[in-house]
Length: 91
Image 1 (cartoon, rainbow, N blue to C red):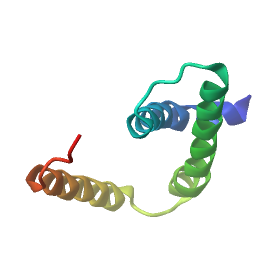
Image 2 (cartoon, helix red, strand yellow; image 1 turned 90 degrees about the horizontal axis):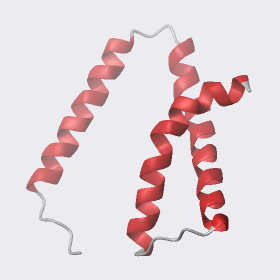
Image 3 (cartoon, rainbow, N blue to C red; image 1 turned 90 degrees about the vertical axis):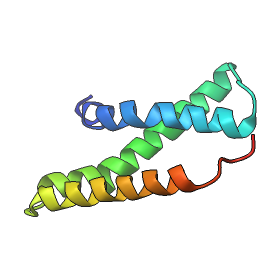
């Protein structure tokens, strides 16, 4: 139970984009139980990977996190600027 508590925030952040991307790319909304269980398993998998590869190393590191946060902020601003000036995708 403690492990699920450790990955719960990442699971909270990851589940909604996964569901929305699958709905967007499949073009339909499937509400069957098997479909939802597969998405739940995939959300758990992504959460576990992010927890072990990103979250734990950042928590245990001796690195000043302000540089990392500034780099992430800068990368987000660059992506926003690129997406603002690119033509929209056809729907």
